[in-house]
Image (cartoon, rainbow, N blue to C red; front, side):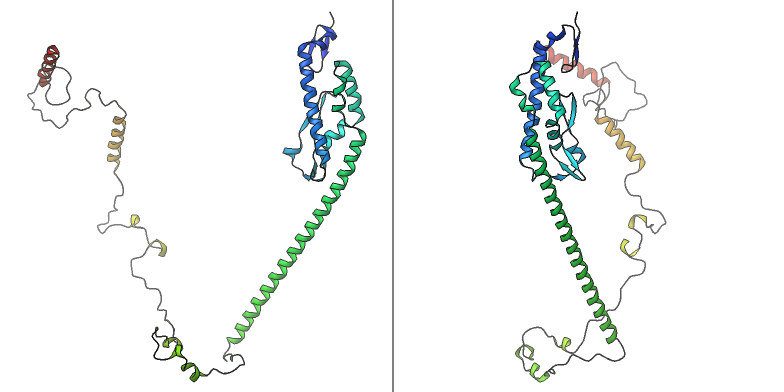
Length: 326
């Protein structure tokens, strides 16, 4: 019995080379060729638009591989040039290489594939050379744009530094003039025509008959007086460093208790547990406030929730009588 190993199906066929004509093998062959043709068509479409193909390299995006059934191995889809990624360049170089062309001929011969589909899985050498030249031009243009962008960024940085130096210099100049004027002698006002006080007094806006607010105190050179921060002794708030109210002690020396006590917390916890029990359980509505004398003895009756137990007998007889009447 002949034994044949099929690399496409990845299993051993005991029917020999007749396995190539089986339905399963033909289906896997057709699916593999469809995937390879789609990858080759996408690579050729990317080669037509090389100008926008150059982009920064990203390992998560550009480290993918495409399975080549003719060569029996995975091929890197994108190429790389330094820190730049070249989409579909690796696959195009593989499809146009002599090794792939030789392995494709062997694959077609062994699997009896359709001859018309063979050229769809190959890239002509002339087409790849044209793509390589266009790719070199795109890389050169991209490098030129990057250099221009770097020069523009450097010019912007120099301009920002110049403006910063001018701002600091102007601030230092103003500080120097202020220190010069802060000496024992008072700085004289800048040269110019002296102010005519009589003319200003005659202006209608500053006359004594104006109806607006009295601004004479501003003309006299008066200003508001700061009398300091007013703080009351022993009082304050958290912003002035005082203790918060929950840390202050009362007059009798005891701290004020905030929130429920521990006993109240336990009682509330028990109530929460009782809420989870069924509401119609036995004894749920028992009256704990009822008074019972020491001489009381239990009588035979049913389970009760209110009153005495002997009253439950009469209640039971009453209900049983009503049921009989019904």
